[in-house]
Length: 101
Image (cartoon, helix red, strand yellow):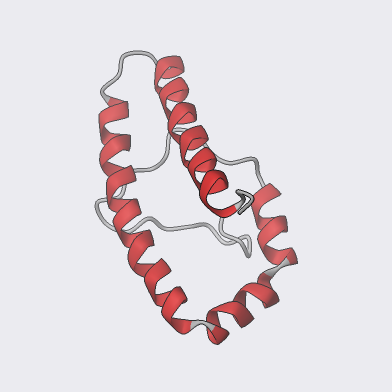
């Protein structure tokens, strides 16, 4: 489901994820800050543009990883590897953006 509750359509060539996020949790967080997010994108268009480019690049990489994960025997092992990837992406962003300078 999308942030507004509509069913998401994946672009051609994108693989449906094997696991889904907790229904509604992320949507509530984003909706709670949607106006601030929109304002930040308008105030800092260069950053917003860089983010869009980054999202395309990371989407490509994650789709490739997802294809590789689907070749792993056993759904529980596939899920475990996905959790490792998600955990490391979160840890990386925390290290970069939430570290005390």
